[in-house]
Image (cartoon, rainbow, N blue to C red; front, side):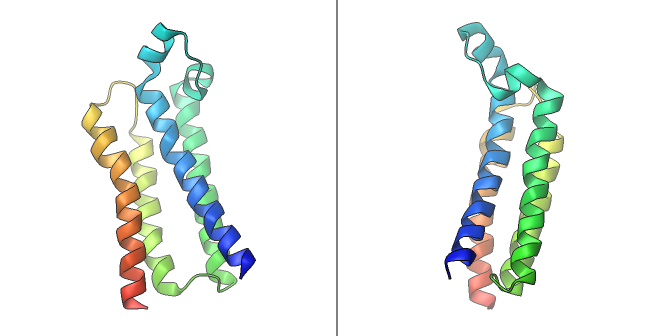
Length: 125
């Protein structure tokens, strides 16, 4: 179904945007020295965090919509929901002073975690 694929792709896009913004926060100092203008350097750390959280909330809404329209299975919903929740927590605690590993392992890791969750959902479906 075209709409099921479209909405699931949109969910993934919103998720990716949400986790890319914290990397802008991480790189703010170096970007400012190099004269690079990013979302975070223009709107600040707090607003960047809120923007990223907005994308996660939109992902939550889209995920619920997909479940309601039966374009995703309940097991997939139940596997992706905690990943989005965990991602929201990671975004809440991101700032420009965080260690590189916070971004490399935790923020990047949620992409892998979401993939594992999708595989688990397929297994349990």
